[in-house]
Length: 391
Ligand SMILES: Cc1ncc(COP(=O)(O)O)c(C=O)c1O
Image (cartoon, rainbow, N blue to C red; front, side):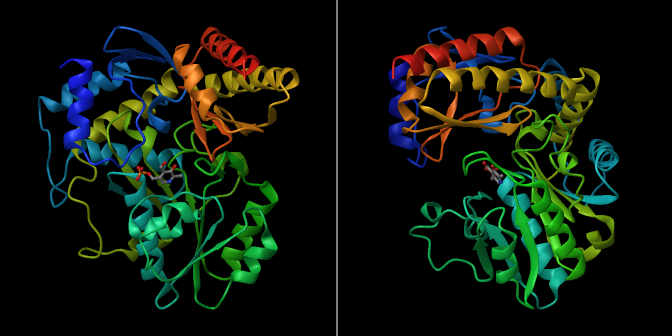
């Protein structure tokens, strides 16, 4: 297919639910992408948080090739070894828990919502936060604290309340005897890279313990090494009752999961929850390769080190260009808040061969692969600096 044929097919045959960038990619390796004309791009936002290992990591490719030639799929009423191994590995790296496999972040959060309601036995209210993002299903879009995602879909699901992030008094005021869970991202991604305060998270844990409520961490975006630890909660020293994961866990293949504290993991019994494709052999093999590669290639250390370097470089830009109001984030999850809309900056970076994102209108978001190099960061920051200079 030629470039225009691709565009035409999308226009004629695919529902217009995404804002599109006019680039057709055909190949990826590490932090680089090649378009249909063989132009190379440096990707500092690989896969919207999916590409923590970069594009086409060799160990993920090998795992998929290996499994696909043996058994592509087997449903969840049977047993298979890749799922058993992946579950064991995830529990090893987290806390005493059992897991549930599904296919996306929204589906993982939907599962957490259902589990909370079942656990609540009549208590059903869930508190979430302004500017949060939890997915696009009806329940998760209701949980999402941004009205723009909810418009046109009313009536929304009953039983959600949204309060100000990092405001413990607002949270306490919203509690009722029907509240069963509190759900949050420790760093709000789509909401503008807003970091939860440690004291706030500690207080949430205390409240949940006192009132027998569940604390749910949505680590769909912050998980799998993004913040320099395998999971972001490890930066806080606070263990959730449920953690949801997706995005980077599959190394580019679709996966979602809940990691549920052991004491409450049997709340969902046979017949109460399911997902046909959840935890199939190919995806489990890919996810195992992701977790093993993170350890073997010491990617958490690299993420922490390169994160520090990236933040230092971004702060240098901030000192030079007053259009940057704030640089915030953790590890390799960086938000650069501008005093102007970021769309044009993203477009100009793209014209210079750098792919980044803008969220919440004014926040540039950079989430490079965990194996990014100093040289690649230097190149990216140089391009960004040149673009900001010309704005
Ligand atoms: C924190 C968070 N939760 C949930 C989701 C939804 O994940 P998915 O698109 O896989 O359904 C996202 C997606 O961006 C996210 O960032």
